[in-house]
Amino acid sequence: MEAVIFLSIIIALFSILVSCFAIRRVKKQIAEITDALIDVKNGNGNRRILSATNELVAPLAYEINEIVVSYESRLSTVRQTEETNRQLMTSLSHDVRTPLTTLIGYLDAAHKGIVTGKDRDDYIETARRKAHDLKEYI
Image 1: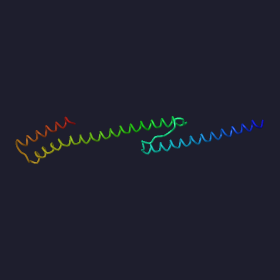
Image 2: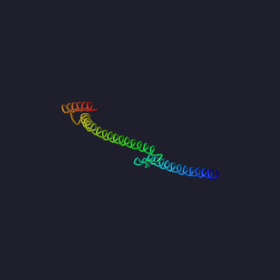
Image 3: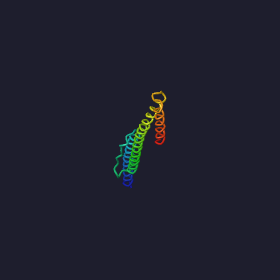
């Protein structure tokens, strides 16, 4: 009878010891996941959570890594879109500024009396056409 009690106590202590090690290991893995998430939050999108496939937190680590990959992909798309928009705005600005500068030049010449008579009428007509061209462009 004493042997059964002693064996039960040994088994209970062993179970507690194994449980403590398992809990400690899971806590360590959760701490590593937390550190990785903090890195990602701070802008390190290349950070991944490494986990052996037989670990308890492996499915969680896998899903978090998938979320980070998806987030980085979307962020890359947003950055490319912003760069494309910036280039488009630069191009449009240049394309509008050039005919507008020409238009202003013709109108200033007519207004300041640099050209007179038929030339003045031609300048005003050219300015009118340029204004309509610009309107069509926009």
